[in-house]
Image 1: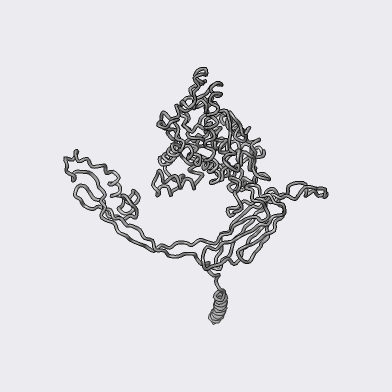
Image 2: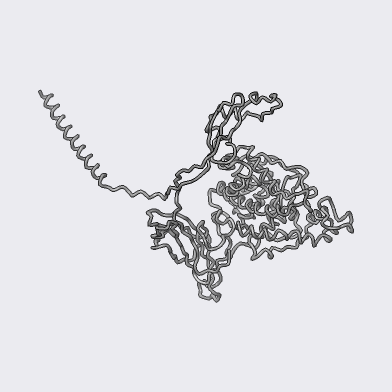
Amino acid sequence: MKSLRRWLSFAVLLTFILGSMGVAGQGSLSVRAETEPAPETPIRKTTLTVNYTAHEWWLVRWSDNDIACRLVVEHEGVPISGEVLTFCGKTVHTTWLKTTPCDLNQVGGDMTQCPGMYFFEAGSWQASREVEVELPLPAVWITLDGCNEEPGQNRCLQMPTLRLTAEEPLPNETIISISGVFNGEGFTCSGSTCLLPLQATSAQGLEMEFWAESSFGDSSEHYTALVRVQPWGDFMDPEGMGTGPQLWFADVISSQWRGGALATCSDIWQVFPEIGGPPAWLSSPAGPEDLYSSYSLYFLAGMLIQNQQVDASSCPNGGLASPTVANECGVDVAYDAVVAWQNQFDAEIFQVSQDLGVPAQLLKNVFSRESQFWPGIYKTYQEAGLGQLTANGADTMLLWNPEFYSQFCPLVLHVTRCELGFGNLDITEQEMLSGALVRKVNASCPDCPVGIDLTQANFSVRVFAEGLLANCEQVGRLITNITRYQPRQVSSYVDLWQFTLANYNAGPGCLSEAIREAWKAAEPLDWEHVAPRLDPACRKAVDYVNDISQVLGGITPTPTSWVYTRTPSPTNTPGPSPTPGPTQGYPVDTPTPASSTTPGYP
C-alpha cells in the first residue's frame, strides 16, 4: 500500500514537472513568435527577353543513314565536342571522335561503307527565352578636393578634403546615405555626397571602409581605401621657425579612386609611391616627344647594316664586328638611322602607357635593354619582340593577368576551354597558348623591306605592357606567401618595381629564393639586400635591373635568364651565356614553347 502511495506521489510530481516544462516551452515559443525576423535584402533582378537562332543538327551513321543523335545549339557551325557529349552521351561521342573523313575512292563510291558518323544540319529557326539578369548595385567613388590635377603628384596648398560620391544606377531610386569607418571611427553622411576633412597620417597611410545605402533597400559593396596625407617643407617646424609655404602631398589607393591615374601597380601592392610621385624611370612624360632618345646602339646598328638600311661599305669588314654587331666605324655611320629607328615606337609606347597605366619611360628602357629596339627573334634563346618574350614569360602573363588571358585565349582555343582559366587547362593547351603568344609578338617578316613588320612591332608594345602588370601581380603574391605580410608592409614602391624587373628577367624561382633568404636573415626587403642574395646563376638580373632603373645609352641586350623555370630550386645551371642575335631579321625556325605547368608559380 505504501508502495502504491509512493508511486502515485511520484506520478503526480512527474506530471507537475512535465506540465511546468510544457508551460515554459510554450512561453519561450511565444517569445520567439513575437520577435520579427530581419527583413530580407531585396535582390536586384529583372527579366529580359533574349532572341536567338536555334540550329538543329543530326549525327547520322554512314552505314545506314540512321540518326544516332539530335542536338540543338545556338551558334553558327557544327556542334563542339562538349555539346556532343552532353546531348548524345559518351558512346556516340566516342564514335564521333574516332570518325575520320570518308574517302570515296577507298570505299568504291559506296558511302555506306564509310566508318563512323557525319553531321547533317536539319534546320534552324528564330527563338526567344526569358532570362533573369542581375541589375547593378550602387557605387561610391573617391576624389580629393583642394589639390592640383597633376597626375601622380596630388600636391595641395592646404589640407585637402576627401570627397565620396555615390551613384544609383536604377532610375527610380536614390542614394540615402554614405557610411563608413575611417581610422577606426564611423561616419555617416546623408545624400549622395560626403566630405571628410583629412589630417596628417603616417607614411603607411590610414585604412578606410565605405559604402552607400539605397532607397531600393540594399547597399553598395563595402569598398576599402588607403589614404595618406604628408606635409612637405619646413612649415611644420615645431619651433615655429618655418618660412616655406604650406604643401601637402595626398594619395589615395582604392579601386574607387577617380582623381587621376594611380601609380602603376600601387593598387596591386597596396603601397604608396615616394612623396611627390615615383622616380623618372617609373613615370610617363607629358607627350611622346619627351620619350626621344639618341642612344648609340651597336647591335641595332649591326642589324640595320645587315639588312641594307645603312651603307657601311667604307668601314672595315663592312661595318660589322660580327654578323649581328656593328664595329666602331659601323656605329658611327649608322648613328642617324639608329636614332630614327629607336624613336619610331615612341607614339605607341606613350599611347599604351595612357591606356594601361604602365610607365612609358619604363617600357622604353625595357625595350632598349632587351632588344635595342630590334623586335625580331633570337634563334638560340627563342625570345621574340621588343621585350624579348619567352614561353615562360608568356606563361606568367597568361596566368597572372586574367583580363589579358580572357581576351587572348579565345583567339586560340574555344571559349568553353578558356573559361576554365589558364591554370586549369591541360599542358598541351597551355603550350599552344604560350607558343601562340610568343609568335604574336614576333615582328620578324621575311617579306618586309627591313625584315621587320613594324605594324606587328607596334602591336607588341601593348602585350609587353600587359606582361609587366602580370609580373607585378606575381611579385605581390610571392612576397605575401613568403612573409605573410602585404607587400606594402615590408617593401617600398621602387623596390617592388625592381623585384618585378628581376622577376621578368630571371624568373620567379630566382627572385623567391633571394627574398626568402633575405627574410630569414631578418634583412630589409629592399633591392640593396635582396640583389646580393640572388643565386650566381641569376646574377645577371642585377645589372639588368640597375640599367633599366636609369636612362642609359649603348646598353647591351642580354637573354632572359629563366634558370629557375618551374620550381623554386634550379633545374639547371647554365654556363656563360653568349650574346644572342637574330638571323637576318627573321627566325630560321619557329620557337617551340617549353612545357607549361602551374605548380612552380608562387
